Amino acid sequence: MLKKDKRRLFRRVRRTLGRFTPLRADCGELCDRRCCSADEQTGMLLFPGERTDLPVQSGAQRRVAVCAGTCERRNRPLSCRFFPFLPVLENGKVTVQLDRRAMGVCPLVEASSHVRFSQRFLHRARRAGAQLFADEDCRRFLNEAAEEGEQTAQIFAIFCEKK
Ligand code: SF4
Ligand code: SF4
Image 1 (cartoon, rainbow, N blue to C red):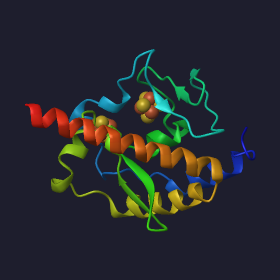
Image 2: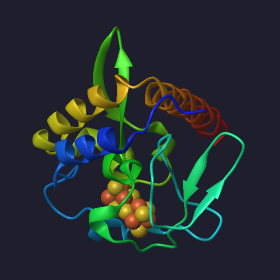
Image 3: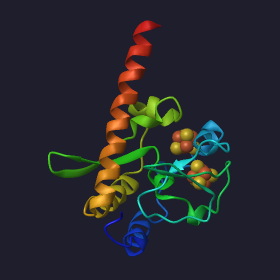
Image 4: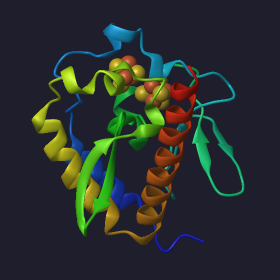
């Protein structure tokens, strides 16, 4: 059960993120839009209470927007706006880090040390992250996402060792 209606919160978060994207250029041209190459089985996780016009698959704990690779850009889900970053709470401070769940999908994550990310995007994403962390349901959602990222990184490390 959600603590409250999130429409105002998500409107504010979308305004904060604005039109800024992780790179000033269109990174989709580099990778043929890998993160938008979903099928009917995969998609982007929706924040608790987030609404979308896209088809939604609901599980016991989570809802996924299934887009099959196209959407109305101005209405894309929040997870797509942050990707491949994730707001995290570290030592009581909200920051943004590369989302480790994007390993193996997004080339920007693998090449991150060579990439100049947009500072304006990162600044906005931090602010938007702070707005989300102030909400109990979104805080839980983001903390779970960070844990999943940690697990993904561990699996990758084991996989790379075996190679
Ligand atoms: S997978 Fe990464 S590089 Fe490719 S479009 Fe998505 S965010 Fe950009
Ligand atoms: S909802 Fe839009 S931005 Fe998000 S993965 Fe699908 S096509 Fe890409």
